[in-house]
Amino acid sequence: MKPLNVRRILMSMAAPVLALVVAFVVTSLVLAAVGDPVWDVWKTILAVPKPRQMVNVVNAASVFYLSAIAVAVGFRMNLFNIGVDGQYRVAVFAAAVFAGQAWLPGWLNILASIAIAMVAGGLWASIAAYLKVKRGVSEVISTIMLNAIATGVVSWLLVTVSDRHAGSNSIETKTIPDSSQLQGFTLIPGATNRVYTLIVLSLLVGFLYWFVLGKTRFGFDLRATGRSESAAVASGVKVPRMVTTAMIASGALAGLVGMPLLFGQDHNYGTTFQAGLGFAGIAIALLGRNNAVGIAFASILWAFLDVQSNALQIQANVAQELVNIIQGVILFAVVIAYELIRRADKRLEQARVARELAAQRQAASVTEGAPA
Image (cartoon, rainbow, N blue to C red; front, side, top):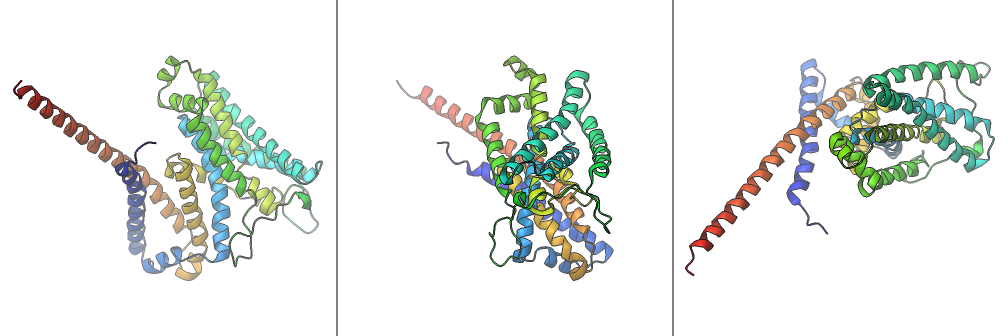
């Protein structure tokens, strides 16, 4: 087993701690500058959540985690898949339409719908992969444009297949059958709501992400290509194929983002389905440094801030959008903090190596000067 590197562990912990401190200070200064009650705001945000709120945090974190993992697959390949938002919209719409037809019973309907969501997300992402590999189009530009196209296409299709109810203005797909609606787990005592059943899906995806990228040849090739394409080519990696595979895999994982919401909460896809999950995933992946465990903590933090923001308007008389400022400051601070810590760690490592070399030279000189 590798020896425990205490210094590296402390350095890894220093960056997020520094980022949180900076976010706390900057947000407090902004609040003070506009005359808002600083203490009341932090007391509201940092209050211990009630059981129902705890369930909401866990549920939101499980969805954010799927989105961030989808983004992280691209990041590890040095691909910026900004299109997770469009990919999960296309995927959840396709899954909702299929599941609503009730062609299959119970869990078969759920599993088939999840498979369809992954295929739909992967196919939508393959457009950006093709444009990059065959036409040299930046994936940043193509995926951003595909987000807008996905929104328009899904909105048009939704109107076409919507299941209208008398006296209602809502536009939504047909509700999935009761046998395919997941009731969730009662994990938190005292809560009237339940944790999504498909939190299991988030855990499985996190494990597979860690295992495939860290323990398999494919994962090594993917990371090597992200570090240096020339080195990857020299080692026999076919970069175009790897780019295509990574982008499609990222899109397929993006297809899973809406599954806990579809089967555990909304039971159909409509105009009120939660939006912006793909963009939240980008921020969370950056905060978690594309690490499976780091992304988990970042997802919980992001979800905690979102849930706690609901009480700001009532208890502190401050708009809940303040949390967007806090999240943004944390994001910028953590990027800067990681760079500062990386540089500090590099200097410490250089100093350690210099000390060891000096000690070796001194030992060598003493040995040479010793009488025979």
